[in-house]
Image (cartoon, rainbow, N blue to C red; front, side):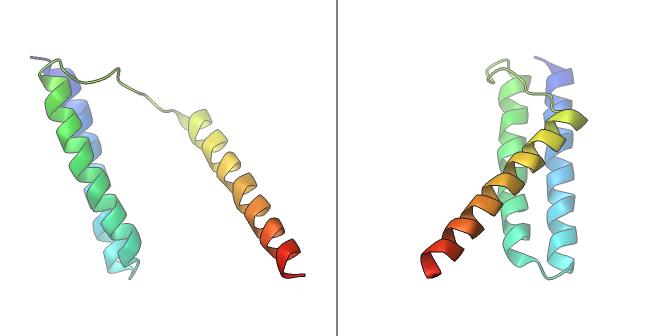
Length: 88
């Protein structure tokens, strides 16, 4: 039993669920549903990690988030430019 890993993943599930509640309150229902799904997945991962059966743990930091957001912005720009070019 790995209590530390269980608690780490379970805490992430709580944060995802709280994010979903905030998004629902803001009227962002599609994102609330996405966050709820993530919360459920994270809770299941908590159980698996606690039992020593989870895949390698991932720890993201500030630089990872900045890189991921930058990558997403680049993809969105590409999609918008491609769509604009197709529409003439």
